[in-house]
Length: 485
Ligand SMILES: Cc1cc2nc3c(=O)[nH]c(=O)nc-3n(C[C@H](O)[C@H](O)[C@H](O)COP(=O)(O)OP(=O)(O)OC[C@H]3O[C@@H](n4cnc5c(N)ncnc54)[C@H](O)[C@@H]3O)c2cc1C
Image (cartoon, rainbow, N blue to C red):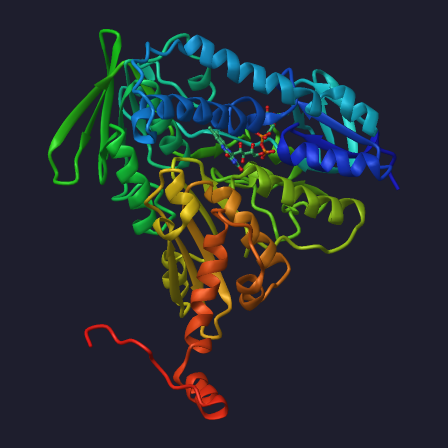
């Protein structure tokens, strides 16, 4: 067998790469991680999940202050937001997490970390700053970047992406966002809550187009109530700089041409796999503009070269990258044929209200031709939800003919946290009767999950047959009161 410098080489020190590095190194695999940025952690830590969730919380605190009257408190006259201080807190949170993703920690685990640009020169070797480094197996986990549309004039407008938006020196008086996906929605609400005038231009007729329209509609209504203006069903035409502002022209849903101007323009139109400079052709790895296609064992067209995370162009979430990293460890280290299964992959958009999904929603079930029934439970019937000011939102449970769960969507307060119970139900194949019978602390938002499961079982328990049977055996006399009599 050829001698390689490493057993496993990893390109990219983000969620997927570091999951594999930690697992492999601790199992005695001689592991090298190559990261092109000067720090580990990837987009999630530096330009994605962590800064966005920090910003969302800051914006929520300000929103609560601004709406204090709703909670019986004196109204507050708030001074404008100093965004430099907001950014500074974002940097602090990133810095607090960074040690977990440090080269020192990975060295302690047994993995070597190198910073620099690397690209394949052949199927087992990369060029790293003029040095050739070889490994028996490789993982490509280079993530993704904001996709920039081919929009006339855009190149001359100083637009922002997720790399810049969290680190502005000042709050823009107005912000125009291209796109209506999770990143666009989270940023739209956050900046509106901090005091920017926000407009969103979105191609499809609903925001969060993967979700069911009724739930996406709840999120949209809340954002509109907070001042966000949506232009849905729009076709982008051009962009240009007008003085210090950016203007985007588009054809609206009725076919009229319109223009929107704003101080800052955020491009959030989806993601593009990071493939530049990887030399994939030198290694014979198939790839397309979408990313690196992999089989369900995360193997590329070259079986010793794996790909995981955003670079595959599939499920672009940190927890998906981590899960896929586990599949890579099983296949590349243990040499076991473990396959990725996304049936119960959850995700969440962290707007307020949050919209969390797992399994099939109605859209997906209809597309797949799957027969389903829907059970819903409203947050306004949940005591804790009302206490906290949420008289809107809903949990939707899709079940099959045998009442087995097909999917759950939750649009409401802390929906992402509430989904954790359904993750356990799905992973443990827990029966809905067990969930309905399990005692939940009162008053909690989580009771909504117990309640929907109970509602589904209620027609069986409180059926005519059961009533008649009980009457027959115990001589019960039936209703004591009938409305209207
Ligand atoms: C604004 C925003 C908010 C998000 N919020 C969430 C959220 O709330 N929850 C969630 O689950 N997901 C969220 N995501 C998605 C999440 O960030 C990604 O799914 C996740 O980071 C993917 O992990 P990864 O390992 O594939 O890529 P990354 O974590 O980005 O890691 C890729 C690494 O590879 C490096 N790299 C690139 N090219 C090379 C090269 N040629 N050589 C060496 N290294 C290279 C990059 O510098 C990077 O460090 C968000 C994304 C954005 C943009």
